[in-house]
Image 1 (cartoon, rainbow, N blue to C red):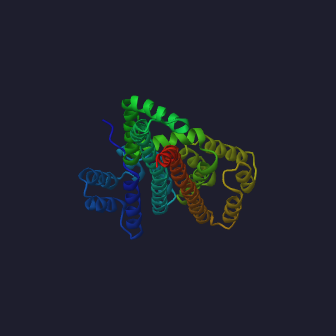
Image 2 (cartoon, rainbow, N blue to C red):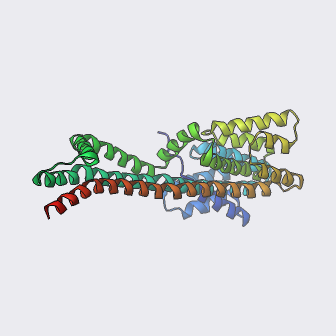
Image 3 (cartoon, rainbow, N blue to C red):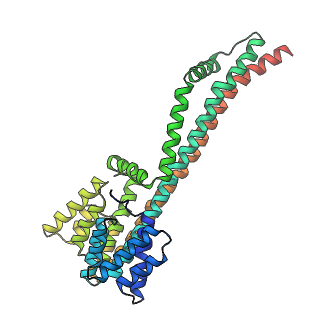
Length: 348
């Protein structure tokens, strides 16, 4: 049976811990063994101990990770490049930043989609209760006074009766929505597949485009920090954006322009791989020999811009939901209370 891939949190911790140990002068095999001894989960401790044994027997770190079947292919490929360039520590540190960024974005996406959906379900529940349980009580009061609900109130009462008759179906739909929200909140794999499907269809405009720009910049920064030439880093970054065909197409366009002999700044700008300001910064960084550090700064800025755009959109959605629901509840109550007040004043 195929073993479950490691979570982003685990990958971030392992890459960061091993990079720290390598920086302190500890060998790769000893570092893996030390990390294994610190693990509370027996399966993970055994995995790291087995990796340490493989490396101690002469296998490269990248080969040991690849053979275990528990690590993503691009992680193994970047570490292999880092080992060949003598930059294993830098490759691990870049991977740690990459997974940290992915986790931060995942938390923002979960909050952005989960809380408005929960709020909307609660508001719909309130409206359904008003239509199916409260309005019939007012109808009985009107009947006792010799009147009936008409106009807007009558239409809402009819809608409430329809909803009440279909209550089993409505409960099933609400239950399915609740299960969906639980899966979205707790299952990282389900959430990743759902977000990937959304990006394939709508991922090249608005907030999704800004988020994809940040993901691409992070992937490009990770490749350059591992010692990859820019062309190979672009190819690697395109491979990490398999859920965004538009971003992959821009990467391929940039590579084709570079193959035709265009200057880097022009190729990156014309293919719209990065925003214009970031293209100029990258070109200056490459000319000054500090392209990897500049790319790291660009990735951080674009990642933050994507998260800020997501938060801004959510900050607009939640008040809008509350406002719309409040208006609907007010209309329902006023459509019932105002005629009742007229009747009571006439009786008085």
